[in-house]
Amino acid sequence: MDRFLTTDDLEKALRQDVRDGLTASPKTLPPKWFYDERGSALFEEITGLEEYYPTRRERQILRARAAEVAAATGAETLLELGAGSGEKTRLLLDALTAAGTLRAYVPVDVSGDFLAAAAARIARDYPGLAVRSVVADYEQHLHLLPSGPRRLLVFLGGTIGNFAPAERLSFLSGVRATMDDGDALLLGADLVKDPGRLVRAYDDARGVTAEFNRNVLHVVNRRLDADFEPGAFEHVALWDPDNEWIEMRLRSSARQTVRVRGLDLTVEFGEGEEMRTEISAKFRPERLASELAAAGLVLDTLWTDESGDFSLSLARP
Ligand code: AVJ
Image (tube, rainbow, N blue to C red; front, side):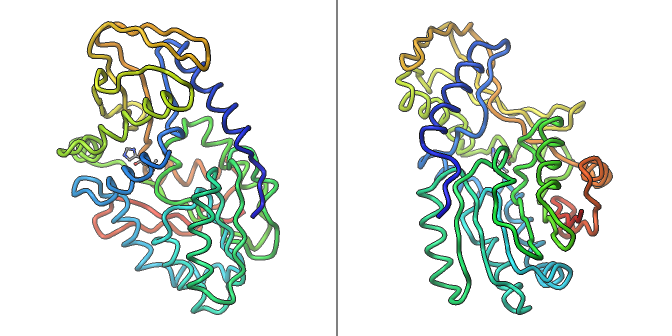
């Protein structure tokens, strides 16, 4: 395992993000801190919810198109940014193995524990495949990732939607900068659709997404010795039609004071005050093409599922 990011770096980043976010107006906390063990389990649960279509749709596209991706790329290395739980990855690994080109799998994630377990399962099930996991932040360490001919970089799940437009451009440009001729990028992105369906996907009837959203407060409590009362914050999910993104917020149900001892910071929340915890941008195919082009990437093929809910784009330098 290669480590470009230490737990110390992560701790520093968390402190910086929480200090910046809680002293900003309006307040924010970035979505990257949702995913401790409980947050990851809650997200897994979200992916199985009736209302949350993206995971299922992306899997459908991969099932239908993995062989085409394999044929179009002839990839020798599969490099997965933000390595997921592995099931969707396996569809690609199976297709690339069947095509006979694949030699190495490189899962990249900020969490080493998570990576080690996922990599061990893949290594066991794909004998002959070199599995080399990398602990890295894909906003900082792209240039350090293993090189080699015919790499397929994949960024699935629609996580690109968590970036604001300017961050998206710098992320995609960073990806482009690490790519050589013969490399390709496979990008999963959720598509603009009926706002009612979008909001339900982020505000499910059982309240799993609400718990997931509030989990960031548990994370800050534990890691920075804060005293947020997660129950005193309501989950809000709304569609922003101008930016075409879903925004998740936590709304303080009363006036309250929160102490973040680890940062020696005291924060006041007004009754009804809302703090943004996530944006999840939704795309139109033309905008994906133009954003890829702005980053120096050429859209080769954009596939959607049968209902046109979600997209997978194959792009090249
Ligand atoms: C993991 C970032 C793709 O934006 O849909 C799910 C996270 N947030 N429900 C998304 C999420 C609320 C998810 N991504």
